[in-house]
Every structure is written in C-alpha cells, then in structure tokens.
Length: 353
Length: 217
Image (tube, rainbow over all chains, first blue to last red; front, side):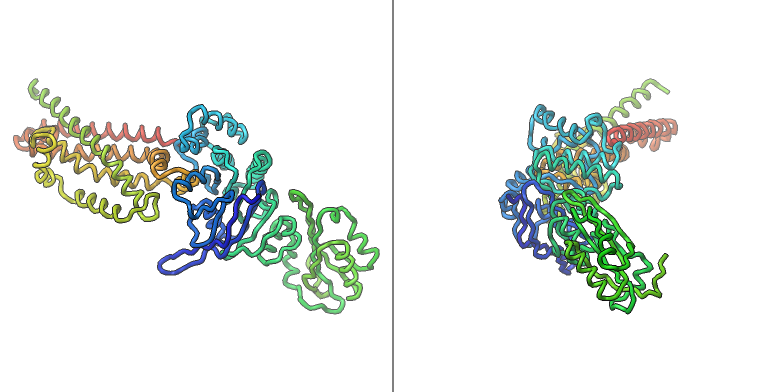
C-alpha cells in the first residue's frame, strides 16, 4: 500500500519578481512500512520537498496524497486533522524552551484536547522508548543535541501517526549521536510499522536505514532505486559522488592527475569493481591472477554493510597485454561484478607512493 | 518633618501605585491581544491579513505619536464618559492606560517575534490551529520577554504619572512639582525622587528575577 504519493509536484518561488523553480515535476511514492530517503546537496530543493508533504509549503501544482487522501484541496480544518496523523522531526529539534521534556512530548496531545490521563498514558511509554524516562522534568536547555532529537521524535510519535517526516534529522548531530538516533528511528520503523520519508545530505544516513532512495538535484529527482542498487550502479554524477563519499572509492589524489582516458602500450588499466552479497566472500582477485595471468594491484578497497546486503568497492590497477586485461575484465563481469574502467596510467608515471 | 508631610508622602506614594498598576493592568489586557494581532496578521504569518495589520499598525503609531500631556487633555471628554469624572487619580488612569496600550502592544509584538519560526512550523505540523499556536506556543514561549515588557511599561508609566498632576491626578510626581518645584522645598523634592528611584529599582529587580525564573535557559 502506498502511504505517501506525490504526483507532478512543482513549486515556484517568486523573489523580487524573479521566478525560481524549487521543485520540478516531482513524482515519488512511499510504501507502507518502508523508509524512503531523499538525498541531495544543499539547495537542491529537498527541504521544500518534505515541507510540501504536510503542506507547510503549498506546491504551485501537482497532487499530494497521504494514505490515499488528496491534501491540496482540503479545508484548513480537515488539513489539521490529517496533520495529526503525520509526525515530523526537524534538523533543529524545534522544542519549546519553556516546557520540560514531558510537556514537550505532550504538546500534540494537548492540541487534540486529550485528557491528562490519556496524555499520561501516551507520553510515558514514549519517554521509555526514547530513553528519556529519568529526564521527564528536565528543560531542553539542559539536554544534549541527541537527547533533544529524542524528545522531538517522542513528540512526533505522540499522536500515533502512521507517517513520519524527517527533515535533516541528524545534520546537527555528531557521528556517534547520529548513529544512535538512526537506530532509534529504525527501531520505531520496525515496531510501529511506520512509513518514513526522510531527507538528508548524508549518504551515511541513507546507507544505514533507508530501503529506497531518490536523488534530488536542482529541483528534480534524477535517480531513484533501492539503496543497494544505488551503491552498485549509481547512474548520475551526483549519485556517484554521494556513494563514493561512503564507500571511499576515490582515486588516490596523485593518480587523479596522471590518469588518461586513452590506453597506452604497457599502461596500467585502472578499474573500479563493485560487488555485493556472496561475491564479497569469494576469492575473486586470487582467481583473477591465477587464471588470467594479469598483474593486479589493489589501490583502494572497502566493504560496507547495508541493511540487507554487503557491498564492496575496489579500485585496482591491472597490467598486461590489452588482450589479457580484456579477458580479466570479462571474467569479473561474468562473476556478476560491476566493472568500470576509469582510465589508464602510463608506467613511467606510476609513482604515487 | 511634620506628620502632615509624612501623611502626604504616604498618600502620594499610594496614588502613584494605584495609577501605575491599574493602568498597566488595563494596558496588558488590551495590549496582549493587540500585540498578537500585530504579529499574526503579518504577511506570511499564521493568520495573514495584511489590510488589518496595516490598519492596526497605523492606529498604534498614531496614538504613540501624541505627546502624553496633550493626549491627557484631549481625552477629557472620553475620560469623563468612561469613569464619570475628568479630574483626580481615577481620571488620570484613563489616559495613562490609553497611552500604555499601544506601547505595550509593540513590546508584546517584538517579544513574540523572537520566538523561533521553527516552533511555529513544528506546531503547524502537529495540526495546531492558529489560536492554539498563539495560546500554547507563541505567548508561553515569549513570556519572559513579555514580562520584561511589563516591567518597562510600569517604569515608563511612573514617569508619565508625574504629568497626571496637571489634571489633579496626585501621586509622587505631582507632589514633587507642587512642593518641591513650585514652593522651593528642596527636601520634598529629594525625598520624592529617592522614593521614585527606589520604586524603579525594585520593579526592575523583581521583573528581571521573575523573567529569569520563567525563561529556563
């Protein structure tokens, strides 16, 4: 079942007479129970995108459906009813400074005019879940960033929504805290079967918890796939930059200057090899050297554990006659690996140690 | 100093307090809704209504630009209509309150403006109505700043109340003018000023303390 569905969503801004197109023809759907990540550089339009989902910003055109209900045509009152069913978490937490942790989590329930008893019954389990039970009477100024975000998550869940929107949820947090917040979100996703749409500029976040991912650039979604495929075959330059940021699959700096696009006699062929799942466990390189008689040198290698898969990335240089190198590449492809020839480096340039 | 003089100081102090506090209460009662209106009807705010915003802002500015002494005299018919008389302490409260309302409204407006936009956005995302957001989020979060605004209004009113002597309003300022200035009784002048200084200090200290306690920063 589709929980969130955006169809042909456009958003234009008019700033001093000049029109800027923040979102262009966005189509996106989030299935029930999945975590859908949207990644993009700053200014790509991702904030506008997520704020369109609960109509904090009204799209210029297009349709927005949450649980099958079209939102753009709703009255203010009906829209508020729907918003009670959509939790939202922000980059800067947005907690009320003059309310303690308990009252912050209780706020959405007060807006729904719930009784003290009902509020108590909802808030205490959430404090338990977010690990803030003993901090209930503490004010936000005394909390760390991670704790503040936990409060915000608790608050977003107070009305038992079925959809959670996360706007750069971990961008103001250090890596360690980010990891703990992400595992909390994953836990919530599993326990409550919550559908989550999150936007981020950190591939790390997508890597650790997302099921599906869309890449947004200059207001358009330029690529969309499941997370493993994005890592395996990023199609666009932007996606490549993002996946490389996690996989560490860049060329050593010195090599980058020496690399040429055309083969030279006796040159090293620089190849990027990506492999997933079982292939990661096979002694591929060993076999390559034995059966193809090619000289192989590993320049860069990494192994990443995604949610459902393992993905490895290697940059190797191969040396041998063109025929031998070609055969070696074919062998790798036959084994189900993704192989990409990045370029060639002449033997006399081969000195990057 | 004669017993009569001490009695005069006491009654003047009481009159000043009466004038200042009662007109401040009225200013708060009217100023808070007015300040809220000035903020939330702005362009892009939760109850955007630009024409109302301009209209209210214009009235507020107009009242604020009239010098108090003129306002007091010009308002005489209105004052008589409201409290039945145009002279005395009670009559002085009316122009004091009227001049304090727009002043305090602006203070409330700027106090609430300091509430981070993100909080309003978060409350909108929770499905809060504009009225709920004002009552549950904006006013409570702005409370320390609003309280500082009340302190400032009280202190400003103490200054203005001195002019209330012109319509027989009484109070410490009146005492200072009639005895200290017009009869050259320097000691009365000095004591009055000392009492006023003490008052202002006390109010400021109290206001700051309460605001700090409320802010939870």
